[in-house]
Image (cartoon, rainbow, N blue to C red):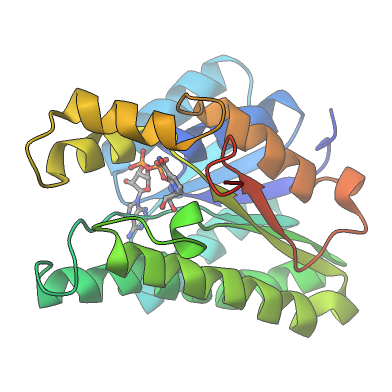
Length: 256
Ligand SMILES: NC(=O)c1ccc[n+]([C@@H]2O[C@H](COP(=O)([O-])OP(=O)(O)OC[C@H]3O[C@@H](n4cnc5c(N)ncnc54)[C@H](O)[C@@H]3O)[C@@H](O)[C@H]2O)c1
């Protein structure tokens, strides 16, 4: 129960890694607001968690839109009574090189994966300062550390999130806010499924999935819970001396 009396906002909390983070926080005693663009999925998860006794709500909107970000943070704070933890997890994938991905795809990729982190942080940080400090965890990717074919826009957005993490850590340390990021390797979520279907070439989605698994030393795709446990560590007091760090959780993808 590391998060008893803690109040967390998790973006992209209705699916995949975000959902696993929400479940982990709830299991360890946190009150949680989950932000998502998919209102139906978010509300269904809230209903399920409330039935189990969780203190949880959904705030619906687009993290990349300034006014949505401001409203979602305000709604989360109104429900939670303050804010201690922000997990910037919402993200999308663009498949393609700089010549094959469309211009709108590039714009949307940067808007959600990078601007979304900036906008949600911008409104959440004053609340975390008001609470006396806390923690932010950004979900980047190994795609922000090494080149993965057909992930150029995605990789650029995630490399920027890694650097934004360090800048935020520097700017808010004096306010008692630790800011870290996680770089997952391939994780078994709807995002990965979509990516496997869309990567070009003559391989089937199953073969692409196997190829990603084989990129790792552990020769398998991660379960979302395996990322959530690391998010929980960085958000908890157990990581009290960790800030500005990039925690690679990739089964050895980038070790070789
Ligand atoms: N799955 C992987 O292999 C993998 C690997 C490395 C990093 N990541 C990162 O982990 C994070 C979570 O990905 P996932 O695999 O769980 O994906 P997912 O598609 O399963 O879930 C993402 C969630 O974010 C929500 N979302 C998307 N755009 C949004 C927006 N503009 N505003 C609010 N919510 C929005 C979606 O509705 C969805 O519920 C992303 O940042 C992704 O880039 C994933």
